[in-house]
Amino acid sequence: MGFDILLTGSAIFTGERVLRKGYVYVKDGKVEGVGEDVVPEEYTYATLLLGGEGRIIVPGLSALASIAAYPMRFKKPTMAERVRFYKSSDLKTLITASLPAVYELHMSGVTLIVAEGIGVELPLELSRLVGGFYGLAVPACSGVRPNYVPGIAAIVSIAGEGCEGEGEIKEIDGKGRSSAGPVLSFFNSVSYSAGSSPSPWEESLALRKFLSLPPPAIKPGRVAEIAVFDASRPPAMLLDLASDEEIVKVYNSGARLESLIAGEDVLVDTGEHLYIAEKQFREARSLAEKLRK
Image (cartoon, rainbow, N blue to C red; front, side):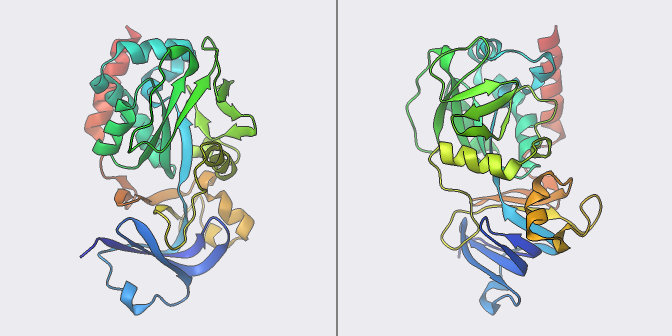
């Protein structure tokens, strides 16, 4: 018997339209049913029940970020300096450095993280330890040309200050830009929260398109990339009753993320991350103090 999830909400943005007072049924990591009004009886016996009144259900975001440089972000290292850090650090150090950024991105509704780095080992190990989906953004000046391996969503090259080259994406003023415009990205940002972007949904779509990945959508047959936000209390209270255009802005409304699903992984439940906790934050702080010295 497979693992299944029933989500209910006051509003569901499928990626294409907004449904009111609806449900989403996920089985074995894929969306099997989506609809409005009464939940079909065969879905009511799900293993896990999420959402409820005042909740807004939306597709997960995709973001590009220098997650392993998170403890150094206040020093605003150039891309070349970040590359030197990646090359001088072992995998355990890079994982420790990355976890707070992964936490912050997940708690913003990001299900696919394209991690800046020089090898596939980091995103593969994060996928194994934490769950979720990962890609790899390789700095053009690193001299590394990794081949695609199963388990990685996409590989892209990136160029920036002190790291010139044939980058498919450019880092400009701490943000990523493709030839088509801005993509959702976080380089040396004070916050790695999607709420710091003016239009996280549009920028996330642009990144997915650039990576030749289908846009995230909550519809039957698609892999589950689903975020549930709580609009039953401030600061986003009553947002679920707003217009369709306002509901799509839930990613940067300040609403609390209640649940996050990526395939068969439930990453966040009842507003708590299930795999990244205080122990990892202490280890990352200790690493940051060593890097300052």
